[in-house]
Length: 113
Image 1 (cartoon, rainbow, N blue to C red):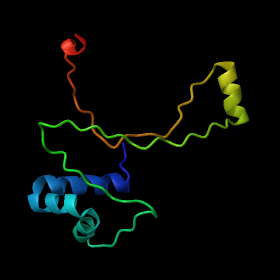
Image 2 (cartoon, rainbow, N blue to C red; image 1 turned 60 degrees about the horizontal axis):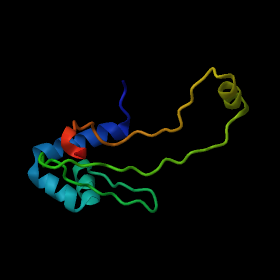
Image 3 (cartoon, rainbow, N blue to C red; image 1 turned 45 degrees about the vertical axis):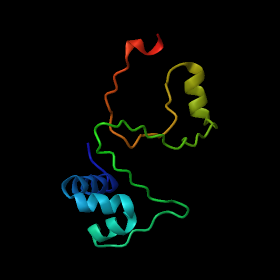
């Protein structure tokens, strides 16, 4: 599996935060300048976007990331309509990939008693 440049960059930033407590603190407090200083180059976010960093290293807390709802193009092409009506293909609506790692959560059976 080939990683994108963005995935590689993300991994470098996370690794640095794990290894350097001062960097992690600065990253959470003021992410864009901290990342720019780390990379040695200017970053530009898309217009209207804000970069938010949350320190999720506290193992006593479970975080749930709620991503934005993906935009769905409900218009199907003739080929897609044919495939769906013929029952010969399955089509995933997306692309949607969460930006979190799986976290094991144990649900107590006593929850609903």
